[in-house]
Length: 368
Ligand SMILES: C[S@@+](CC[C@H](N)C(=O)[O-])C[C@H]1O[C@@H](n2cnc3c(N)ncnc32)[C@H](O)[C@@H]1O
Ligand code: SF4
Image (spheres, protein in one colour):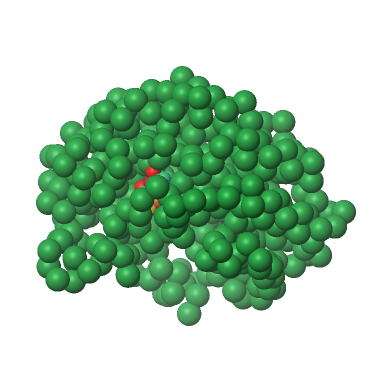
């Protein structure tokens, strides 16, 4: 089974008003203490695996804003991973970066430490919307960061948020056209979600911020699918697009239901131990996490099968029905789901693009 490592860095220079990730603003950060905490959790996971340690195929530094880490801290984490596990020759090592904390020296340090893929949070390609999203950078800065990333890292991805207030299909079309012209092998294109307990949720409730209705959002989504397909970077997952072969292997590992260590505040992991599947969870609040212990709990077969189904159906490639049946002794009952949301393609069960948009409802029907 594939194995990867997720490292969560929980700090940001400012909190974006739409974001409910486990990310916090702190005046001062004792980087050595946080790094030591991450190393301690890596040791803990390796000890749980005893002598059955899998080969690490991917590492992902996510956040928060891991591009606030020094190259030294990133290097220390990667060295410890290499000491604890064998690594694939072509190990994929991704780091998420905010354009406001992107500079040549920092990127060069990451590259020297072993990072070979950079994911950049561009979010929008017009300054008005970047301001509305509370971003600390403008378009020019984002483009500079992108050009730098493309020079230093072999593989680059960019994030954009669409379905913003008042965004027309034509405006999104223009922006996406420009994003595609940068020629990155991978793009994550997220529809703006109003997350509970964020400043955007308050504005939304009071009517000060309106987002596209379902019909308009669907038109934006379809435009996204069409344009990315035409540009040779089709969706391989609900929001993720890549040139064939350039998919994020770390993301694929989640969605193909592989195993991964999750370290850092609030990180989740999935481990295969003694033929059983376990979930790991860590304390969310950074200061409390420093002195806390990772929690481990077994996932029952039924829950694991359901999770497997949910993950696989996010992918355009869908699910291998025979392998699924052999692993869990259960075949999902497709007849329970309304037409047009699922498709059987040979031995594979897939969610249609429309089905992928309402995936939770589809799974609830399949597994009821
Ligand atoms: C951890 S951040 C990426 C790195 C860095 N923190 C940054 O923002 O530049 C992950 C991505 O999730 C997306 N995201 C976060 N909150 C979102 C929301 N409410 N709706 C849609 N996308 C969201 C953004 O595109 C963001 O780049
Ligand atoms: S979107 Fe990125 S920079 Fe903004 S608060 Fe969330 S994690 Fe931090």
